[in-house]
Every structure is written in C-alpha cells, then in structure tokens.
View 1: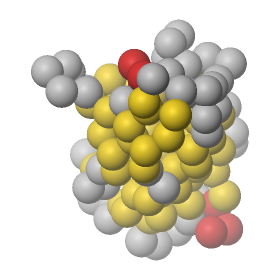
View 2: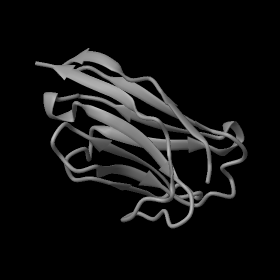
View 3: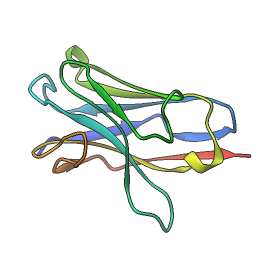
View 4: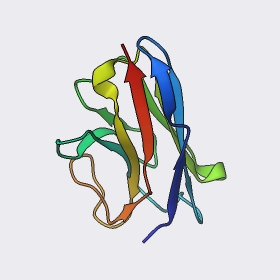
Length: 120
C-alpha cells in the first residue's frame, strides 16, 4: 500500500474554487493510475477523476469541464482543481492509488479524506 495524505478541503460558496492535494510517501512515478473519489452522506463512494502516469485523464460526467486532475511525479503529489463548485459537490474527497487502480476501479490505498462543503 501507498500512504496518502490529502489537504485543501474547506467551505466555499457556490461558484467558487478549491484545490485539493494528495501527497504520497515515496515516489509516485511507479504508480500508474491515481484518482480522486468522493462520498456524500448516504451515498456510495464514486470516482471523480483519475490520471495515469503519462497524464491521460478520466472524469465523471458530473465534473467534466469544471474539475481538473493533475500530477507532479517529482513532488509525489496529485492535485484536483475544482472550479464552478456546486452544492452537490459537497462530500468527503479521498485520494486513491495502489494495486488494482484503474479508471474504473480503486486501488488498495486510500487517504484519510478531506471535507469539501459548498454552500448555496
């Protein structure tokens, strides 16, 4: 497993922006797919965005055009830039990587999560 630590969550008004960061212990260059998932109260955890080592990305339809995932292999960090936030984006956001990670399934490593709350 890969230790992951998220940061950057918080409270923002609708239409605002936040940038989440996920720092991995050790080099992420060897990790192919890293992703961001979110879970709202009473709902299942869902994929938000994922990125391969080479920079290919995948997004949930609900965030396309508003969110951007990126990674800096030299800094062992993955980012999620969230713009035009909506109240329905409110959730705990989790960074994911590790064995089995793909564009459609999570790997076996999760961060502790960071809360994002968007007020209307």
